[in-house]
Amino acid sequence: MAKGYWIARVDVRDPERYKDYVSTAKPAFERYGAKFLARGGEVTELEGKARGRNVVIEFESVDIARQCYDSAEYQAAKAIRQECADAEMIIVEGAAT
Figure 1 (cartoon, rainbow, N blue to C red):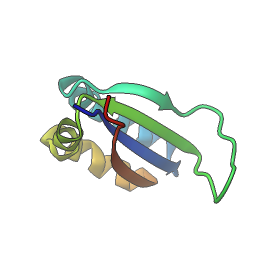
Figure 2 (cartoon, rainbow, N blue to C red; figure 1 turned 90 degrees about the vertical axis):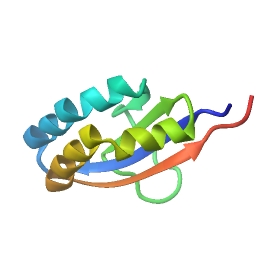
Figure 3 (tube, rainbow, N blue to C red; figure 1 turned 180 degrees about the vertical axis):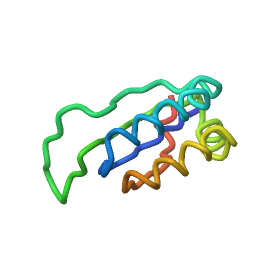
Figure 4 (tube, helix red, strand yellow; figure 1 turned 45 degrees about the vertical axis):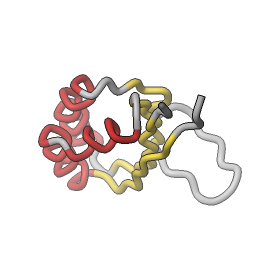
């Protein structure tokens, strides 16, 4: 089964409030087995405009990635994130192995 990946591109407007998002999202990530492959870190723009923060999270499947996003735990975190950051988020299916 192919893995599922969240890819998030984020510009944080309020770093202190963003910490609340991170702590509120943590239980959802733990519950759904999220594995952070990239979180923050240096970015090299190749094409287009980069955002300040880029995150790649691996899940066991696209279905589990979606369940995490739709969970009550993550939706509470999402509400906080939307107050303090602008983001683009997608779920991508990994290559079949």
